Image: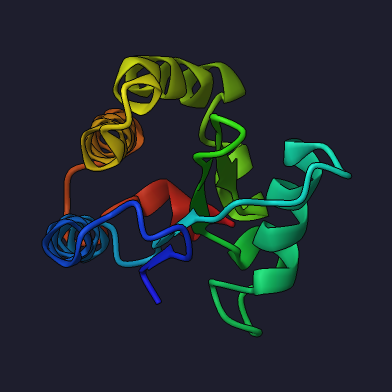
Length: 149
């Protein structure tokens, strides 16, 4: 699963377009594993808790990719709560400032608030791609700094 939408807010063609964008990004940065999840979470717990739990329990990067080898990136959206998050695997945390992901989410807020889920997700993906480009090193290895870990 690259894009999961249990809310059915995204149309089939939107899911296909988002998948293509993610696949292209993962070709540029082969260490990266990107997942988009749209789900309506129960109100009994804070959204941040669900985001943390899903990133860690979901093991999107694979069982062998834990700790500093975890280069996963989870984009989580709850349309009912109107909340979103970008969660980074431990191996990306040292490279990406939390402020940067917060800024990307802010750029997507107007689209999300107006129910334009695909547009908001595209804004996030473009922002992440620009962010990764700014911390990457030219060469075949994509995010070569990831190899330092």
